[in-house]
Structures are given as C-alpha cells and as structure tokens.
Image 1 (spheres, rainbow, N blue to C red):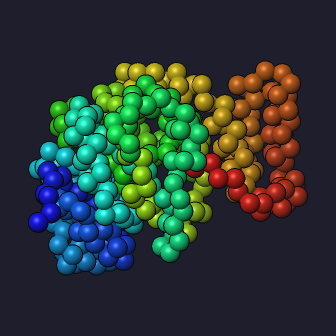
Image 2 (cartoon, rainbow, N blue to C red):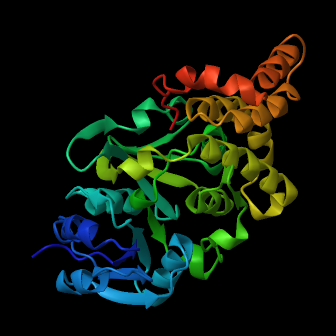
Length: 336
C-alpha cells in the first residue's frame, strides 16, 4: 500500500477536458497517495466536469472568474494541512510529491516546497528549465540533502526580481500560509491589466508569500509544463512589462510584500524595460517598443540615454514600421 500524504491537490480548469485526461492520471500515478483531488471548474462549457468525475476527482464549480479565484475556491474547499497546485494542462512525474515531502520533513518550518520542471509541447520534453536561469542558479542556498535545499526569502526575492522562474504546478504549500497568514491569490480584477500589461497572479502571490516564508526546492525535474501554441505565441512584451509594473505596485505598498522586494525590483527595472522593448519589436509591436525604450532611456546616463531615445524615435513613425517587419520575423530570444 502506498504511503498516504496529508495533501489535497487543487486543479483549476477552464475547458480543460482534454488536458485533464493526462493531468489527473499523473496524480493517481504518484508514488505516494494524496488525501483528495479537487478540480475547480471555472465556468467551463465543455465536458470538464464529467471527465474530472470519471477520473475520480471531486469537482467544485463556479462561474468563470479566472485561475486565481479558482485556486482560492479549491483551497477553501479543501481540508488537508498541505495544498499542492497543478494546472489542468500540466502533469507531474511519479516521484513529485514523495520528493517534496522529504524536503518538507527536513525543514517543516518552510511553508513552500517547489521543484524543477521541463517545457512540454504535448510530445517532446525539454531538459531542466531552472538550469537556464542564471539568477536562480547564483542564489545562495542551504543544502538539505543531495537533491534539496532552502533559499532564504531575501535571496529568492532578489532572484525572482530578475524574472519569475517558479511554476504554480510545482508548488506544495502549508495551508497555514492561506488560513493563518491570509496569503491567498489576488484576483485578476485587482491586478493591472491592459493591451500592453500583464501581471501573473502566481508571480504577485509569491512575492507576498515570501514575506512570511523561505522556499525549499527539490533540484530535480518533476513537472512537465505544457507550452501550447497559445502559450508560445503569447505577447511576451506584455508579460515582461507587467513585471516592471508589478515592481511599481510593490513600491507603492511595500509592507504587503517580502522585505527588500521594492529595492530588488528597482534594481532590475532597466533590464525589464529593455527586454520588454526587444520582445515588442520581435512581436512587431513597434509602438509599445518605442514607449518602453523611452522609459528605459530615463533610467540611463549618457550616451546610452541618447541612443535609447533615438531608437524609440526610429520606431515611432508609422511609415517606418513596414521596413522593420523583417526584424520582427527573426527568431525570438528566449528570456523566460
């Protein structure tokens, strides 16, 4: 008989019936059993509910309100002392929870345990994602075992301010972080969003959670993160500029976030603006790229300020943009 862990798994799903057929079996295939699997149906119009129930999950249904509200609903419907998050289009490898639980037992005071992960397009799978994140790899760490360690809140914030590299589907969370500390996911309606700005709910949540806990990490690829065509074609400039705007939100309410977060994001603001501009150019969004370059120029001294301003002015005229289209078709650099 498999060891049963005191963990409830929360799976938010919106029209995810096809994905659940791979996601939910990956929970059943864990080397350790869980207490409950809760699929939160976020107003789906397909057979998400029927598929989830046929695969043994408990279903909580709500009108469509987004992934943050769905996660919160699942957490509130759960009873186990630990919450594991898994998005409907991702999947776990069999030893995911067992490895996380060992790390938890080594440092039970740490409220978040995460793992490495791989990109997956439904067929092929990449290697380690975290291995390519220099800010993560350079963070100081306390070794727990040959495969696990703890990164302090301060060092994790400094690394995350460069860019977000943690994945919701890798997270095991002590429910006291929600019930006692009140660190629930902030709904999309409460975050800044527009045609040129996107702030990830999970990113914003992490930076509040790090106010009260460090992070333990199992240094093994134990999650496959699906990158669908929609994910790959997402507006990367919008996401990267959202990171910059998140830094402004933190600066406006620093007490809500981890100590040092405002300063860390200020240090990386120029990098974020530069990368957002480049991503907008690669997407053919020259007006947004010009706006980001103007902002970037204000962070620089001469002569780089003048060069950035000239670059922005080059992108502004509508008649110039057809000439720049070939640039947008070059292969995109992979920042995230």
